[in-house]
Length: 214
Image (cartoon, rainbow, N blue to C red):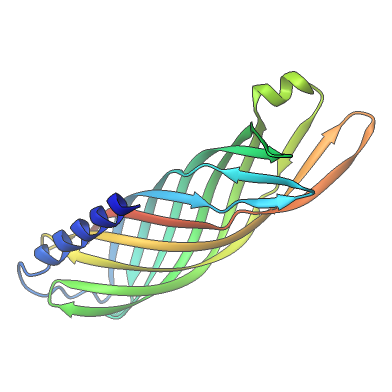
């Protein structure tokens, strides 16, 4: 944890250093296209005395931004991630399966300029999450007839970050986001009724990105 905090402080220092270079940028009615590499950590959830714990993993993001003014923007984001999910039953942890997600997020941002080249922003929005779940080979070897499907789901989120121009058209950004999301997981097995449980997939996301403005 201490190493992560030091790394975060170093990134912020670099952003603030670059923020003192050059002139202020006019952003009204401008489009930006960007990419971001993030770390996503989902919270665990307990259902019927079984605790499901997704591993922290990498989230790949692409985004499109439109600035209505220097203070307000709208961002559309598409991402991709996959993570191993462990299940803890009676104190015993096993590799349960793999969850793949494609988040589609729409976020409104308010920007406050802290100097001519750099702004901090706060935002919030909604998301739709395309999800696919597959059981691990361990679980399938024990019960080859069992199958579990994850439904797509809606969620919402808040975020904050720092964005800094490093050229006239290019910015780097540090983005932090918290997501509230829950999905229905349905288990099917011949000879047994289907069983559906809602599992929380809330997550904290921190990422470093780059964006080009036209």
